Image (cartoon, rainbow, N blue to C red):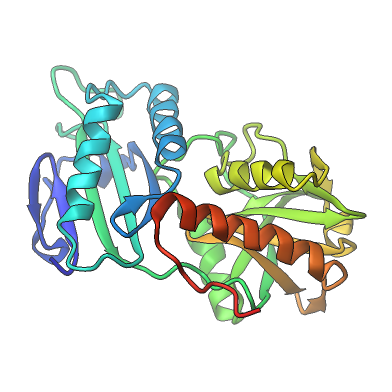
Length: 288
C-alpha cells in the first residue's frame, strides 16, 4: 500500500478511512498520540515511544486495554503493509471512545485506536535551520502528548509564514521547547536541555541525544535555560522523531550558533549511527 490507515482493526488507504462523528476527538480532542519513524520496516526507539504513550494514557485516565506487545504488533502490521522499505512516519492515537457529546467521561464504552503510516523523509542534518520565538501560552500539562495542539498549530503557521523551520516557545524568559520539537544548546562543551517537568514533552529523541552525549563523554545538564542563554549558545539543536538533531543558524532574524561545529557534528553522526544500527537502514542525513 502507498499509505496505511487503521481504525479499531479496519485497514485501508488513509483517504478511504472514516471515523464516527461521536468519537470524542471530534468535540474535545479527548485523546493522546505518539509517533516514530520506521526504515527498513523497523521502528526506531519504539520502546520509548510506547512508554510515553502509555504514560499519557495514564495521565489522561483513558482506560486503554490493549497491551504494549499487542499495540506494537498492530503498528508493525501497518508498517509491513507499506510498499516501501524506506523512511515512513508511524503515527498512532487513542481517544476516550465514541459517545454522545458530554463533557464528563462516558461510561460503558471503549477507547478508539487510530494508526497511520505514510512516507515522510527524515530531516537532513547538514544544513542548519532558522527559527522564530513565540510566547508559550499552552496549558500546564505539556508533558502529556494530548491531541489538543492549537497553540502549536498557530506557532507552526507563524514559523512557516516567516520561512522558518520551527517556533521556539518561551514562558517569560525561560525557553521551554518548540512547537513540535525539543530544543537544546551547547555551551562550553556541555549539552544543555530543559528538565522534563510539566512544561515540556519528554521527547524520545531528546532522551536519545542524552544517551549519545553520555557515550561520547560529553557533559550534560538538565536544567532551565533562558532566551539570553539560547542566543549566546555555541550551538542550538532541535530534535524530534523525524529530526535527529539539526543545528540552528538564525532565530528571529539574529545569527546564532556556529561556534562548536565539530562537537555538533560528533553528536549528529552518532545519532545517525544509532538509527542505522537499530533499523539496518543506511541514510545519508549528512553530506560531510
